[in-house]
Length: 386
Image (cartoon, rainbow, N blue to C red; front, side, top):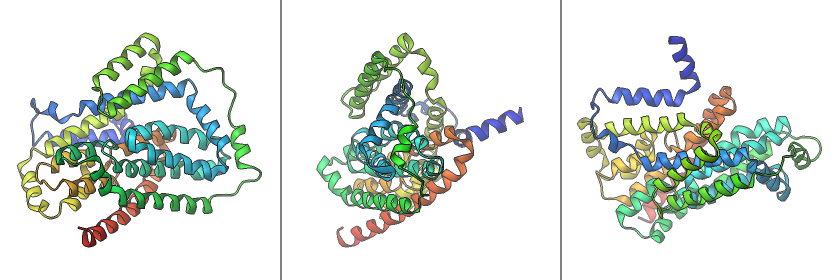
């Protein structure tokens, strides 16, 4: 039994830690009806739909075709890397950081595997870390880019233009840093003989024609999900439609959904919800929040992620502009600082479990560097443009 638990812990480390934290928090807050209010069913439902849709599109070969088109239309490996990172950065502004990573990390992994082996090994972890940071920092520019922006923007009664103006210096700086990082990494990349582009394209195998029914159905479902992201339609509609379609037409796709990621989210929601109900913790927040909302949000995000931090801290201050800046910067740092980062980690773990430690090292180091730059910018703007 202990051996099985150890194997499970090694395979699902993040899920195991999340469950342990949730169970420990139950000693302070006994399970009751309020537990159901902790869980963001909209996020879970939408995440399930997006994972199922992306898995379906990947199964019919859409990503292979997109990868081939990108390589044919872009000059060299560095150009492709840059494009994949910028897609996450800019599209996360309208489809959220979670959706951008679910969509483009698998595409990046496909492309990396078409590169010569030495070059592919060099870029594999770097590009996923770059995409994750790009999605987390690109999404902070708009109200619909991430859940905490949508919540705080609505609670503050801000206009979209006010939020964009507030976050534009941070997004612009992040974009510059990402482009510099790509160029520095490219300068250190191993050189391969011959044309990188030709070698990459030769790695694609010919595929049969696309299943047009699956393609059309999943694209329609994806569009419906985007309408849900924009809060035009309730999340129950895409959830029911995705379930019905898979049960009737594509049952094998049900097994491709990453249920351990959904379970990780549930466990973290329980842990965070219980923290908010511990009196000592609430008193501690009241003491440290006054005048330090941004830094408190950054620090709180490191242990509970930025979305729950936004929900929790908004009950202790009305300085929502500071919370918006703090929770967005707070998405950098630890693996759980932004729950979207778990998506990339899970893809790496599936790719090769032995790469998890090395990826965490690259991810954490790069996040800390970006966080330092964002905090320097925050202190500068706070001092000279309060």
